[in-house]
Length: 181
Image (cartoon, rainbow, N blue to C red; front, side, top):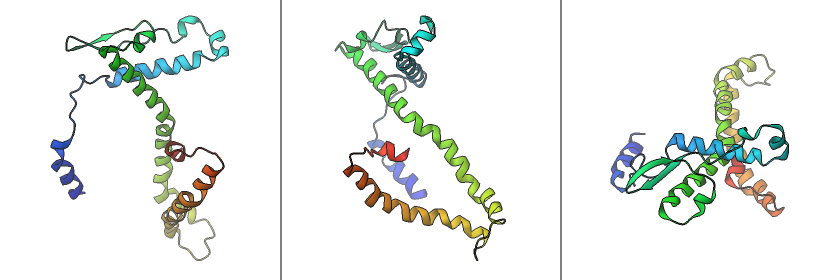
């Protein structure tokens, strides 16, 4: 850990440093844009649009950071056509919308992290307690925690060299995000 920290600090001058607020959206802006994109996607479903009042629709794009005269202003946009123009101030807005769309694609995976770690952390306590009540055929309850690393050593090469290539041959998309999910 110490060597990793020292390596990180030694390369500090090689990193690209961005000042907060100068390079585009802040976290609240990204959240607003994500919420707007989700509502827009839901509103495209006919049953949603017919069930809820129009005031609940996506409306105009929420205010985003727009650069003018070297300063950043929070400006509400009228519609998506404002983003498609090719001037430099709209490049930031377009990038913010792209960033928000990418965040939405990763959210389902990130939503599973707390569930995974809640279950994984039970390995040392609840699973060992459960193992005391099981017929283990000569294993001790504390030895049950060895099963997880053994499964990882078996399943990672099996999936990487056999299962995923077989799925790709059959035309099934196994991109890295799909593998994680």
